[in-house]
Length: 126
Image (cartoon, rainbow, N blue to C red; front, side, top):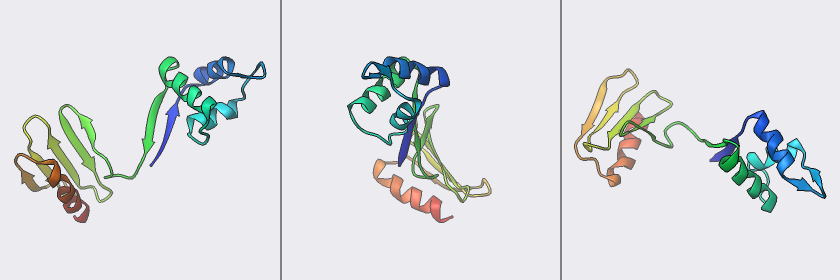
């Protein structure tokens, strides 16, 4: 899974001015490599920390559909390339699997963490 930190242009310029090598501001490429996790040294870790802490940076993860759950409004939701979807309600423990056409394929009461793998496999196979 790849990840990166997104910072606007002003933030990148500020990071360049903040971090210096031999008294000179670092180059834009150095900052972008650090934010894309292409470099992993002390300077890159400091740049990433400052980007998130002081310059409004947000970490994003790049992964395939279905490898993760969105967490919103007390509900976990997973979407798959075949357009199947899983909804898991954290308040009630209920789970619903929707097929590619939006029809309810399966319902679960009191979903346990140990069941999620099986539910995911079923949704992927639709």
